[in-house]
Image (cartoon, rainbow, N blue to C red; front, side, top):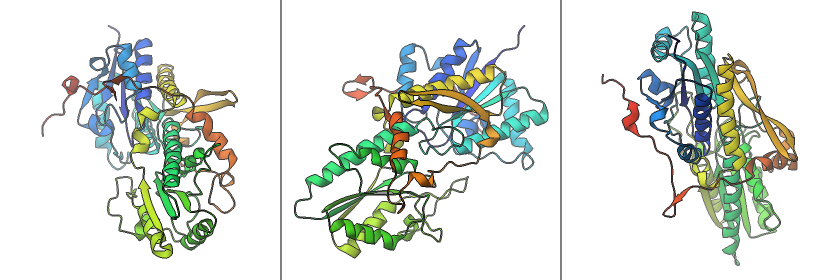
Length: 421
């Protein structure tokens, strides 16, 4: 009797508006390539360690379900932020993972995620080679932060950039409508710990009928709060309404996050990342005290990554494409790799998938190039805008029921529950 060829897929890290399109790509291509079963980890590698998984055939029954899944925000399978120990620190964790994989006859393990998730793929593939295991391990890129190395861009970024550009434009219109004989300053806080790709996308608000934001501050350049005040005062001498976009992760020259000036940051995740929030509110209060005009801080927060109604068609199609490419790579014997997106041309925009050794990607971080920011560090250049624009094109209309979008939701009756301890 032929050995079963099963595949298992998980989602990890912060979700995006298109993360489930990659899941749909994995599932559809795995079935078409003749894999016997496609399992889904419930809450990623952390759930797998608890033997919490689902046979995806109990969840996806038709092409309509696949289309719903592509339009569903958040992580359909549930996500996690779990850091695998180094192999030499805790072999027992790896032994347990591979015991479960062997019990399920897993041929290929696919993980959809960002930088920390690629670290998981690296460690698992290294352990498999070290111990003579036969499973293949492939990474599928996912992050709105767009900070993964070697890929032109990451699925999730285009839709988040589109949402940020549209929201910035709408905030500008709102501010202008209230500016009669009164000065006002609005500060928009946008996600981005070390990389300013998302904040730079606020410049997409520039158009024939919109000047776009007045100032843009990215975390790649140290933030000078005194110079910031000077810039704002100079703008107020020329116009009454100012809109500023800032990354949540902007830092002073001494390394302190600006958000830490207003309150202490207590929560730190397992990867050592501080929770960043309050940058816009702090700067709004600072300007109100120094200048005396009306100020407002707006934090886009999780709306940036969950606005599936604003998803880019390019983004959804590419997310589906990289999911399928990971299955193809695994089926052809690749392991310890991540699928990447290569930009073939800008006009017309075309892309293709490639594949790179995950060791060249894990724990690396792609930042906005300095020459894609102006000399003063207060805006992005045309090169930046030209890079982003193709990624926000097209729409993927939600499937509406009674005026609201329909999503595909995990049926927990089809999941294997972890044993009680």
